[in-house]
Amino acid sequence: MLEVKKKCKELGLVTYMLTWTFRHNISEKLGLLLVRFFRALDYYFFNRPFWRDYKKTIGLVHFIKVLETTHSDANGWHVHLHMLLICKPWDTETGECYKEPKAEDILIHWQSACGSADLGVPDFHGVTITSHNAITSYIAKWGLESELTKQHTKKGREGHHTPFDLVRLCEFEGNRQAGELFKEYYKCFKGRRQMVRSRGFNEFFQLGKYKTDVEVANEAVEDSELIGKINCGAWALIKYHQVEVEVLEAAEVYGMTGVEEIIDTISYCPVPFRQGIEKERGS
Image 1 (cartoon, rainbow, N blue to C red):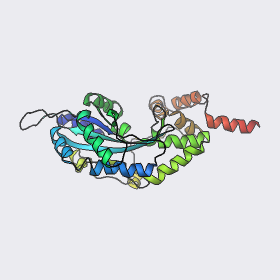
Image 2: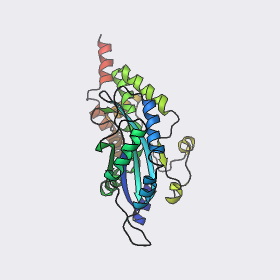
Image 3: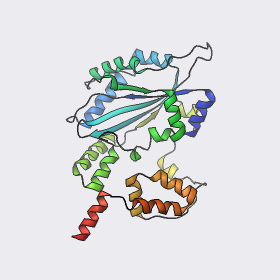
Image 4: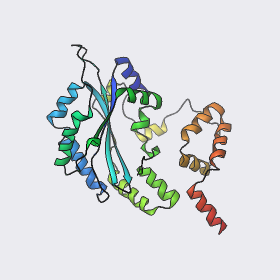
């Protein structure tokens, strides 16, 4: 996404992170929630005059939409949509400033959409917008892909589990319920696109055509260099403690010595699945 950041800077575009969600409870199934959520978005919100007019008032140029789902023991499945808005700050022809998007402008229309689609009508938490100053610094530091993609590396917050948190709970801690929940997630999301870009996005930001997974996998990476290898056990520890970034940085600065130091350090930290293995060996 480096090209996107460069283009935004060149053209003076500003960005906002808009998030939609709704009320939900532990008894509701993920499949039905998704059907109603998309009905609320596609039919009762995006296709209404309000949104068509509102896009013009905020100077919307392009967007990226990403669907995310987490689960909590208290409230069940939590479906939400992130939308990165890329906007012009002013009209280049008239010089007039475009309106900065505000959650309160959108909320009442989103609440109406949720009610029409038989979703739990949200309070003010149903729509949130992160200002362009905050999101721009976030993107500059971590990259667009850190927030909008790589969902398998994310961890849930405040008692919420991402789908791959559920996998880790099942694999490392033997939590069968978490495994069943992941199966439910898999059935609902298999083949579903979770990231959607606005029409003409790639052409505008000169990103070229989309590449298939096979094309990406077969691409030659000229800048890569093999400095060493680690075994599957070490990689499992690295993933469990989520220190992939630290390992890559250590490899870049200190080579394999730095990588081995991190592995040695985390090998002394308690890990549920390893404790289970050691307990079995001792019995």
